Image 1 (tube, rainbow, N blue to C red):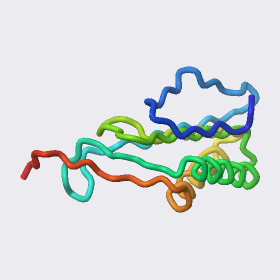
Image 2: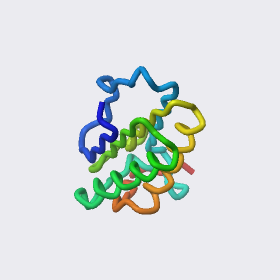
Image 3: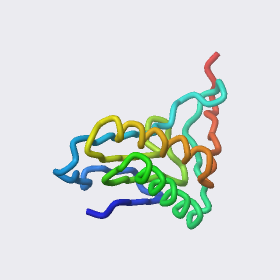
Length: 132
């Protein structure tokens, strides 16, 4: 099993084919799901755009930083671009480690750094009908 799987994709996020290493005791999965409300307004979804090459490079750097700091066994980061409807996942992160604390902390650091440093931008698509 390779350490890192980074993917920027227009496809729905499917985790069915992802396996765990049997040597690791902790697996933390995180899904970032598009909410129905953005900036206090109803939305149909979010249009994501990215500088794909740079985003993939930054995600790999972030994954490796977390690996070194938390002694992670593997990291998977999949982020969608294009239109993602409300209620669907735009981000999937899986972190494996020998122990749960390392997996939770590593996952949290990856998500925080992703928000700060990765060139992925979101543009809400507001619903045509707003509820008062």
